[in-house]
Image (tube, rainbow, N blue to C red; front, side, top):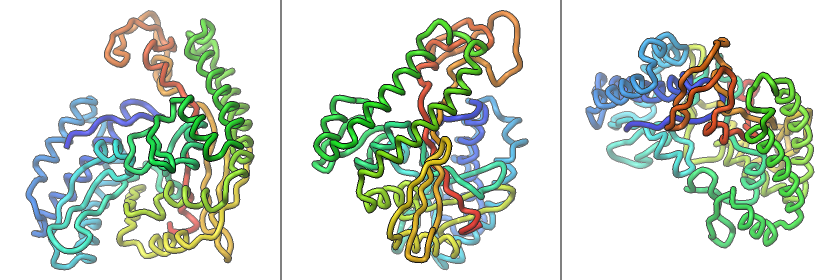
Length: 383
């Protein structure tokens, strides 16, 4: 049940805490099911051991229990289990943490609820644990080019970054030769946009990863902030223009899946001591039903963001904000810490280097990327 660490924005410590929180939530819900006599397996001690290993790996044993992520779990896990029992009287079940396994299959689930008998024996649940509430949640992430790939190609049961064409051929999105061939076959009018986005991506990476000027973050901090804004604004406009060439129905289908609002997987949001569980929340279920019957999507850009408004005959059902920006992904050493003199040793993806504060990391810097996260505004619809 041990999980690997996710990548993304924020500090590595916070990532360890977030990952450990999913295991801790699984362990406590399993423990509660056992205590109430509805567990189909008695495995809470094993999951607690996984949690302890995760804390030890990230050296977060003390910090975890001081975090809001931990507080959110403690405030909600018992009632979540009771909700499941109320909706499934007489059934026994257990919980498993599956984040790593499911991510490699392109699925959203972090935890599965496995019933011992009856229909719907397994429910996959994506967990969103937020420090400051879940008025808005992140539903997917990607790069400039992967955004277009996601609209053109299928990624069901594929590892991250892998796609399937309408003919059933699989390819990795970073393989530009194959990608361009498949784009030409299906939507040749989009190829010029891919070429522009490739050029933007190459210019960004060549400068920040390879140039002497960008060796130290202090030298490029102002330029980085400007590039995030200027490049993001340009790409948002390009994205809207590119998507105007696609059938609106095709865009709607992709957004229904990307948001998880039309899916066989479920959502559990935690924040500020409260929770939203799609399995038991009637408002959320009604939202999903309405999105499933949506008629079209209105797409506009504003500043660095692309906004997708999912609509039906009554108007906008829900809106998605997709900011276009750049992601450092830890490319420069210790910029989230106070500045220090001299050199420090840093394990950079398996090899130790002596680095100054703000110096470019030789290996990790290669993960610097363009970024297009999608955010779903739940506040007006559910919360």
